[in-house]
Image 1 (cartoon, helix red, strand yellow):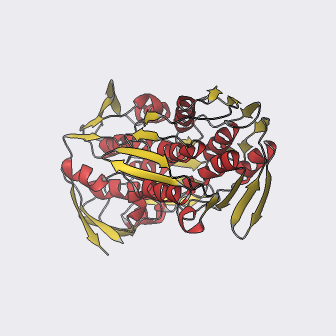
Image 2: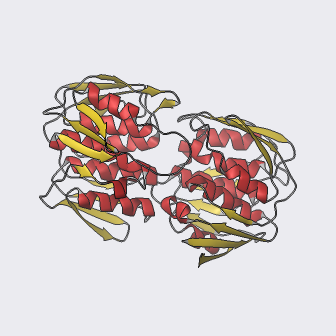
Image 3: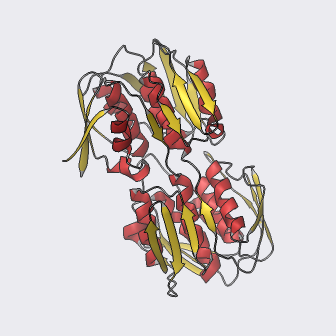
Length: 420
């Protein structure tokens, strides 16, 4: 495993380009299972999670070629309905192959997924949705096993205890594309990644409308074709760099960012005293000497993203006052608190909330990354801390941020990657 060694306090300047969206790419890759024709995806980020999904698709009957940031996905004529534990267990997004395999092949055996340890992430809504479409589903030996001669359109209600399920919505939407008749997903996730998946499916010949709203309507078709599609920018990576610029008091240019997808973050930044200048797909951040404390609650889109909660916790650690962060999406997503505390932050947890008393500065320390977004928060803290920070287990970071250490070095950061 690799570790990052960061010497804090270096001024950041220049410009950084945001990569293609990880959270949109994974379900779009899964959607290529719905056709035997060739699909081309552009602006694909080179990440551990992307590579894992490619390996999974190859095991399910696809041939895939990388050409710079372009993926060419072809069928090899050997469809396989079994998604193996060794691949699925490492990444939550791989559950998205369930719907395509079931509706295309009439059967699917998909291992229960893994991914970041950020709390309970059940798959009950996935099962509920495909059962509503007529599938017979059981869980056996750590696998979800589903069969159906032909799925039939239905009305599916997808609200869960923490709101709509993004991957659940994606799975049911993909399954419904080849089902007989009309499917209506009520309380669908509204995230841009769901909207992008629907747009890609429509490019393949699907008939989907309402994406981006709580009600998505899918009219089943008999067959889907190949498509040539460009992935959008990663809004979470974009938000991470915006928060870093605010925390480091740097106004480096952020390119290839769709800031319209970050309205909740923009509102929060205004409240802590940060000004954001937006021009087309570029952003500059102007931050005051002292940031104001401001309490937030995470919600499903368009609310404040849970995927930016850890990064926001890091920035609130350096304010002049007290703030409270409540995560309603993943109430247990606070493993970064202990590591930030090692760097001098004053944070305590009470249930599903973190109470932060701002300090004047953080100090470098050896810390361990617990999950993908916690890794980003520790990198942010290390870049502004006094002294050296050593972050272990950065494979989490490599799952979701393309070449982030190289991007930061280009901005002037002092970062070295070494083997543990």
